[in-house]
Length: 319
Image (tube, rainbow, N blue to C red):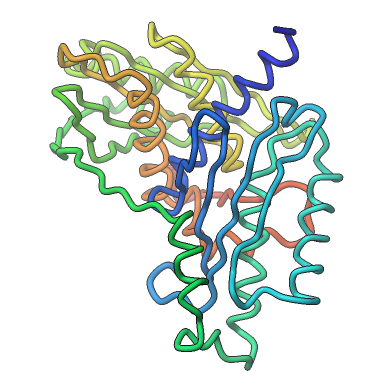
């Protein structure tokens, strides 16, 4: 297998794991072997008025040299609406050649659904939806319930008077427990590399965190003068976990933040599920601390930009 194919394969794995973490129950694996996936997109998660199912097949050359093969499934999507949406997706692909674009596609579709719901036009008449349409969509929708046991681990990170002005506040997320392994995310706002080191040192002062099997972390700091990111990650023995965590943060386009995910191994191998838990922990705490918005809010920020702006400058984090 060529090196390019291997690189594409790993990038696809990283993107799929990130999307699964971001969208949860909306994301569905139809056929993992042939890389067929589906995501249910709606204008509003609680009271959806307009809903569409995006089915994608990922060619082996994606994202380097080939776009995803896709199908838009919705009984109401016809004529000019379908043409305009297809053109929008094509434009996103052309503007982002060689990059992972599924997140951009999903949020563009959600943006259009929100615009549609805000118009005077009523939603589709569900009573007129044929039985064939319902069966067709059911083939692609997949529901799964998380069976993780949540255990609250309270960490107290003490601060001395000398460093309270420089050490950023550290937040701790709700743990996820699966087969006796526990995962918990920690987050701190950072604008200097020195702060990354300070936060890590402070976390490791806590015996529970220091004794974790792995402390995976990633950070992204936006350099205003260069208009680029200073970013890095650490696996801490969990091979590829740091890179996947950083990939998630890149997709969400968060900035000026450090995320650490601690894992306490419980003696039972979790396989690929461990990466899912790591990303889920990270995404949850980013949402809780307002670094990313809900899917409905975030789509409003997509606009016509090449990149999705998901960040919020949280100056109130600093004291």
